Length: 109
Image (cartoon, rainbow, N blue to C red; front, side, top):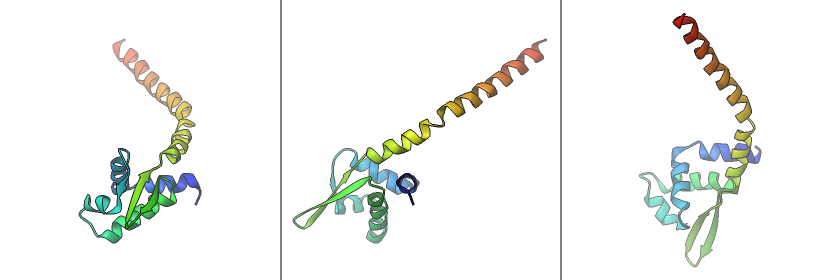
């Protein structure tokens, strides 16, 4: 899978988006992240592995603790991909709006 695909998969799950939201403020220990969710530690580990594969987090071991940090650069690639379609959607939305403006004009006659 390509990098964009990995990022899209990673952000497709609410739990992973919540982890990102938590890490945006500051790095956190694995145990702090795991405590946020009412789920097995293995499930949190799997979510973190997907985020790491997408390049959205990094891990750093300090003594016995593992600190996890958010890395936002991969989200820029998603934003760029979405922006490529902005012109397409704006054109279609303009056509949609024009349809209803013309329909309203016909009804008012």
